[in-house]
Image (tube, rainbow, N blue to C red; front, top):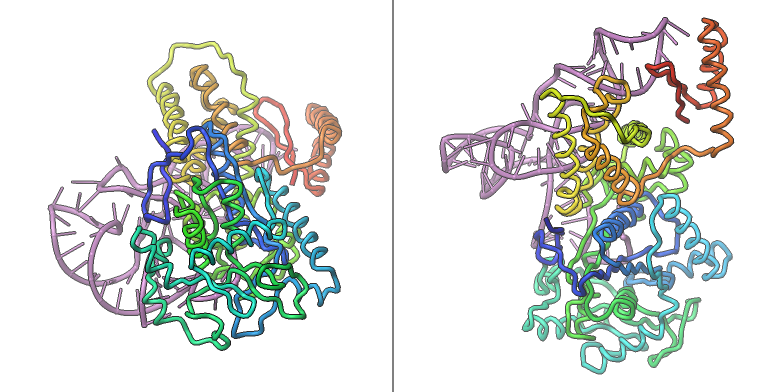
Length: 503
RNA sequence: GGUUCUGUGGCCGAGUGGCUAGGCAGAGCUCUGCAAAAGCUCCUACAGCGGUUCGAAUCCGCUCGGAACCUCCA
């Protein structure tokens, strides 16, 4: 059983074979740190975190590179050409790099809340100006870029003509051809520097008010939008690497331009598999700056946003994202998030019950009905791998987990005899659930508090048990109800035991 | 206008040509001092109209609706 991934390049699921055996190079487009990340940004980073974790689970050594775009890009010729980072810095009276640092820190904080594993390398655009200049020089030397007024543009038409012959036309990823684009590209002002409207900037001459600027062979300026990813992926992952990921909205033009730049530079399609996650929508619309409908991650966690009925824990959001397939749109809504919150809680509690089940159970002669349970559990568990290998279908794995939950709880409540599961099945159940829930899906317990809180709650529960034994329900209810008011829910169990869950 | 995708039960969402995921909400039951939790049961859908097929939510066509990209965007 092998891993299959949907490759945007071929629009098909393909068997995954890494270029270097046992190793995977993966590049994912990271955030532009000119502002705070919103809910939509959570999707790619969580999606690729799970892909990263799964590849590791399969035994690959993964070099995961995710950039930080901290140099201002703009492709807004024709409108007010402004470096967005520099502009906001003026408004907020901050140094641009101070601003960049602030949002980088916030991004890292949110990624940590989501329990994502940090990338192996997290290169910044500003830290790789030299590499970008070197790449641009080579592209100019080879005749695929030209200089105009201190800026450098990529000659898309020439590229397309030449590279179509070797199977790398401009538009190969997004499935559009240049002719269509030339017809439909709308008229913009100030296009006279470009030979062709489809051309894109590799280097931009910096106007005087532009704060972020670097010397270059073409004068002071800053890199174009696309070149950093080509330069940095090439530096850390080589001429061709395994996986390039990002949001679907980056397919065109960003990834298309990356492919073209890198193809000129090293005559290869830079990445073998292109993986794109779909968007998070809100009221059916993509969440994004331009729509003014974004909810920042800090707002998601705090609940402070008009559209939010309550705060949502990072793990709720992570679980919510994993409940759908990464290539489908996912619609935000309070009902949906609240559903995920409860679902995750139930799943996690079943997982904790599972961890508490004793491994060695005396086997008794089994009836057929009970044998069926053992078979069913094995089937459900084996499907975990099958589903993940089918283009990372986390939604189906989670569905199976919810079929296992009643069995686990049933054993605890003795609806199902403990010996229904063979020791090796129970052992497999435990190890597989741990591997998937914690290691691959990266889920963790929502509640906090630690040992001391646990000790205190154990004490309160023992007091309540005593009261109950004496049929002093006034006291026992008082303990239960007042704890509930504090957000701690007590649960009486069949055998007179008691447990709690927070929130 | 061009390119691509999409329309599943109250809500969120998987999905394969036939065996009709899963979660949340709702209803009933069991357990329980009560409650909660848990378990069991119920609620059974695939935008519309044609077509292909023994059989389609799943393939094809048309109609209607929605979205993404074509401009910074995860």
